[in-house]
Image 1 (cartoon, one colour):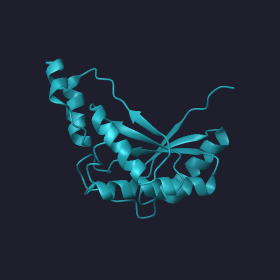
Image 2 (tube, rainbow, N blue to C red):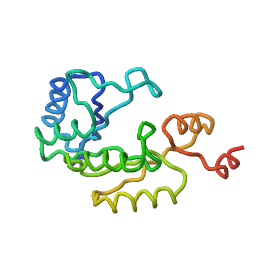
Image 3 (cartoon, rainbow, N blue to C red):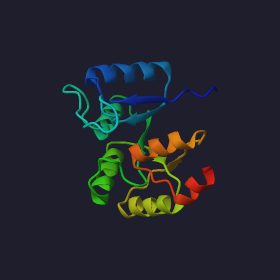
Length: 168
C-alpha cells in the first residue's frame, strides 16, 4: 500500500475543538502518524509563549488529546539535544519530555545538532530518566551557512567552531 503522509500539527492559536476536528479529519483520511508540536509563539521565536485560552496548553496536552481520540495514531514529538531555549535546566527539560511520552508519544525527533557528543549525552539523559521510546536525530541540510547559523542561535543549537571554519 502507499504510505500515508505524516501530518504536522501545532497547538498555538487554535482551540481544542479546532485541533480535534483537524485530527479527526486526518484520521478519516487514513493518516496514522502525526508530529505534534507545541509550536512557536504567535509573535515568533523570541516572544513569550501563551497558549490559546481554549486550546491545548502544551505539547503533552496535545499528545494526550490525540491519543484519547485516536489511540492507533502514532505521535512523534520534539526533543532538544541542547535543551529547549525556554527550558530552565536539564531536570525541567527531561520532565517535559517525560510528560509527552507519558501522554502517549511514540517517538522523539530531536532539533538539529552538529555535535554527536551532545546527542550521545542526551541519549544517556533520557535513558537515565526511563524514557525508552525511539529517538530520531534531527538533521538540517546546510545550503546557506549564515542562515543556518542564525536559525541555530534562535533554537539553541550550537555551531562548533570547526564547522564555521569549514564554511568560511
